[in-house]
Image (tube, rainbow, N blue to C red; front, side, top):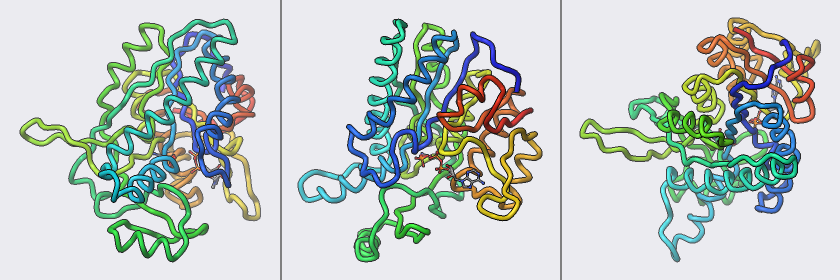
Length: 316
Ligand SMILES: Nc1ncnc2c1ncn2[C@@H]1O[C@H](COP(=O)(O)OP(=O)(O)O)[C@@H](O)[C@H]1O
Ligand SMILES: NC(=O)OP(=O)(O)O
């Protein structure tokens, strides 16, 4: 990838690892501290003259909010998953907002940082509503898992233990994309579509209501980046680049993929869809629809990757 020039609109998606480290329970202090290095890097993008939109995951946090609601059921009414998703946007969005505001201020940049409660429209007939796959919250013991199952939650076992899973429908449009663009035009740094956006449906009578689901933030970020006509989409995750045959003989770092190559790798099953695969698919969607590059990398490689010397670039 050629080094990027100033003045571009860049959407950066923060993976869970930039907000929460393995083994952490997710206190506000832990998350704020983890975000500091990311805030400094993102401030450099603004200093270089780019228009910045930040999106983020919410799997661990929204699952914790559901759990807090469930455990306090006798004392206060539990909120549905869409409301919990909105709460997670506020929770994580505030931490990112404070971090970015601080980093920009210290870099001598006076720029408003705005966190926008964002909804995504989904199809009520999406088959995902009948097949929960999206992991939220902590790892549960077998005993806690069976208790939660009795209370109506869907639990599945993965390599780490029992996990709460929820439906994850396809995002069709980001309801507030025009407002994200207006905020960028007004000179704001914008945090939007956190946790994939709050999923909503519109009934034939016009009524909008939230639904029990968590959208993949990578797919929502890709859609938002298309809808605001971004020049570049960046996925910040836990690895410097995508790896073919991860953990096997012949493991290879992938520096450059066409849309067709990216889709081929996802379809082959080499890239697990629940982790890196969904990012590669989201990157391919952006590259295909915008005819612009998407980048998958980690925080420590970001600077070099933007200079064309690292990360995995998915090209149109
Ligand atoms: N083939 C692969 N190439 C790169 N990373 C992979 C691969 N397979 C699994 N991973 C893992 O997937 C992680 C990214 O998925 P995940 O942690 O769910 O994303 P997020 O950073 O958005 O939370 C990487 O940090 C890495 O640990
Ligand atoms: N909503 C979402 O995709 O969050 P995670 O990336 O944390 O799973």
